[in-house]
Length: 97
Picture 1: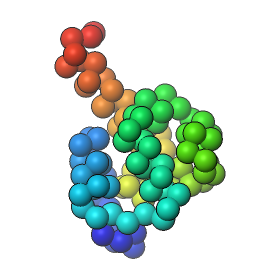
Picture 2: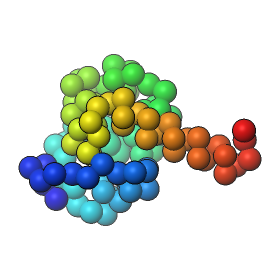
Picture 3: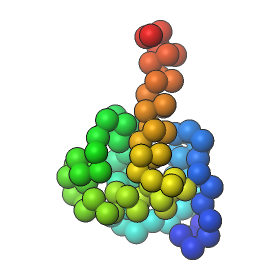
Picture 4: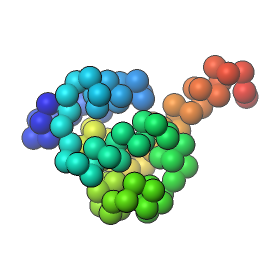
């Protein structure tokens, strides 16, 4: 899948992971770094800012914003909301309120 085609917004982290890992989505090197780190450390996206994520991933804030839109989200805020929901689901399934 190349970046010129329309990317459907994933509904959850599982779909996002499939899109990045299995579906063959090709991202520029720095964007791929952000996407892969986000999957390993979802709390970084869920509770971070564009600037803090950029610092952690050693990229520019605009690269972080581009990752979100490249993966089908309208904004970093929407990308972040997906990760927050993922962490809520994990907490709920572990029995935490």
